[in-house]
Image (cartoon, rainbow, N blue to C red; front, side, top):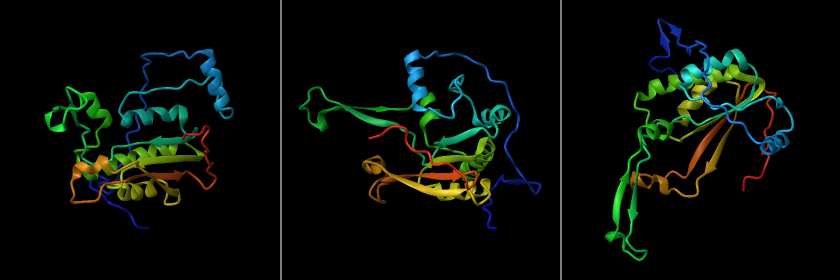
Amino acid sequence: MTELIWDGKYKDDKKQGPVRIALPFQTIETVNESAQDRQRRLELFATGRDGEWRNRLIWGDKKYVLPSLLPEFAGKVNLVYIDPPFDTGSNFSFTAAIARHPETDADEATYFVKEPSIIEQKAYRDTWGRGLDSYLQWIYESATLLYELLVPDGSLYVHIGPNVCHYVKAVLDEAFSHTGFVNQIVWKRQSAKSGAFEGIGQYGRIHEVILFYAKSDSWKKSNPAERFS
């Protein structure tokens, strides 16, 4: 079987897996929804939902969050969607123009550059900065734990950019035993303007990719509960 090898995957001829230390979670805030909102949610998800279930928003490093979920949720999660960094080098700063009057010419407008805050850099940037090898190891460790969290007919959707999707697919193929790949979903952007800063040396990117994997052949199709357009 063909295998993708990267620096850090093996140490002393042994494959390096994820951290498996389960840490306790600390509750910072509890939000109580209204009876109307709760009833609407129960109607939207009529089956497969425990009436006592409460959604959780967890802030932390996935390196420690995922193994901490295993004791409670191993083999119990139906669907996982992740949007990891694309490793594109983008930092999401932008330039905005402020005109004194609606009819002011662009050349006469005042421009300022919005740089991302520290929190925005951590939350939204696509810069990895630690090399492709560490990125692939990060993806492999994540996929390994997510596989264990899924129910036998569970599904994983990985939203990834075209510059690294071919590497990520090879890593996911290994994590899902080379049999879990179901499909590659391509969704089209409204325009390629977001890639215009890259210049005329290449075509603007007009699509992104969602890799769809299943834990077994008995995966369930998840139809949209509501129209999205």
